Each structure stands twice: as C-alpha cells, then as structure tokens.
Length: 227
Picture (cartoon, rainbow, N blue to C red):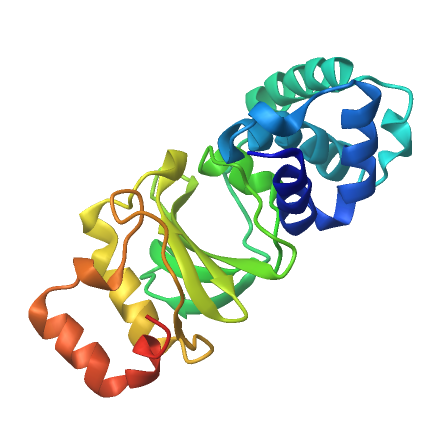
C-alpha cells in the first residue's frame, strides 16, 4: 500500500481522529508504504480506542505520547477493563427493535445507534468500530444464569446491510440464522444489502435456503437492488 493510499484509508476509516493519527505517524517517522489494511488497523485501533473509550474523544491527553507509549497504555487499559467487564444482571438501555424473549429470557435485537462500542470490544472481541457513517445492530440474549450475551452484530451503512458477523469477527453460528432472517423480513428500517465482505466470515443472503431466499425476494425485493 502506498503512502498516499494509506492516508486515504486513514481518512476514510478514522475521519474523526484523522489529523491526530497522521501527526503521530509523522512524529514517529513511520513509512506507511509497507502497511496493509490489516497492519494499518492494528497500528491505529489502540490509538482511537484509547481516545474514545478512556478519554471520551479527547486526544489532548495523548499529545505528548509516542505511538509506542500509546500502544502500551492501551494494552494496560484493555487488561484492566477486560477483567472487570461483566454483563451479569445487565440492564438493557439500547433501543429494542425485535423481541423474542419469554419471561425475560431469550433473544432480541437492539439498535446501538453508534459506530464504536466499548461493550462490543469485550462482548464480541472484535474491533468494536466501523466508519463514522455506519451503525451497529446486535442480536443479544438474556440467559437464565443472569448474564446477557451478544451473539451477532450487523453493520449497516445508511440502513443497508454491509456485514453480519459473530464473535471474533467470525461467521455467525447457524443457530442464529432464524433471527437474522427475521431481521431481514421484519425490521422495516433496513433498506437492503450492500456489498458484503468475504462470505466465509460473514452471513449473507447466500446462506438462506431456497425457500427463505425466494420469500425474501418476494416480500422485500428492495434488498437485492444493490447486489
């Protein structure tokens, strides 16, 4: 990846903190020409996570820190927060958009209405953020042991579905297919599918059986306009 393309990548994916990130890279005299997208993310995520999750979006606390120092600070922060994070006796405060619970237990979909999420970092063990114009929907579950679990995350882009993943950025388990399919059918805010990432790490319309796919095309044809 060239320096120019890397800078464009940073501006697109980390626009809120673009100037701070580029300044830090220049201070550290890092050449971005050898960086892949994955390597750039690994370089930048600790910086933006620390700014947003620890300092509430204020980068001034890190002005006098090098990238290496910021990475060390983030690792220490992550270890502390991972140990104390819990969803035991969790009180849901996000907007519930579809609800399948019985007697308070079971699955439901929420709209997180954000593009980065502290909870997701520890619930699903992924990067916990997307572009600033995107949003997260999550399939969650209350279990009888008192915990609340995140099972599937859907990334939307202007209400078009862009990614559907399980924990650790893996493809969701097939047991959640009925809830994903119901989201397609019954959450009317969704406008359809956009370009998906790799099928082996994302649930897509191709994972529906013939009957489900035919029914979705019949009831919500707009889902297929962009693919």
